[in-house]
Length: 254
Image (tube, rainbow, N blue to C red):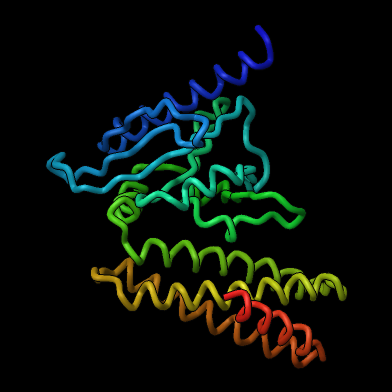
């Protein structure tokens, strides 16, 4: 068997794993789509508890590996042409990452390509090996996404900001940074401030109100406070000018 055949077989096996889990564990409908050149492998139709259609749809790109996942993060390269195609769709798109060795699936929404730029170029989606597993409890969040919930989009923005803040705080505590690191952090702070403002706007116009949405609002408020504290720290150590430059550039890009 050639290498191309092995990769193709792994991909097909991963798609079958996703289909089985969506239909057997979550109770939703999964349809395969034969348009891999567009980066969409399947579609999830969201059903209610009586298995009635809700109108919610999610497109799925499946990435598969025969290897086991090691480490706390899974970084998956994304194709720019696919990202441009996703941006043209009127329904959300998620990535499903399958480890055949473990029989596990991880997932996360795919956003505009500006959210997925890699630090060394290209486009990357990073999955948390612990919290981004596809489980039966994922059904609620997928339902929110499929039915275009503002809170779901806000949740993803807030989680990305919190993850970046945690990473910065860890390096600050270890005093593991230099001028180049501060320059990168200033860029990240500008992006976080922009995304948290977007999250605030999304939550403002969320038509549902649940305990879960309330927790997202609280997390957003906490993240915005942490960003403000980080900005104050930049000025305290004498690098406020770098931060202000990045914040100004971000506003011009908008």
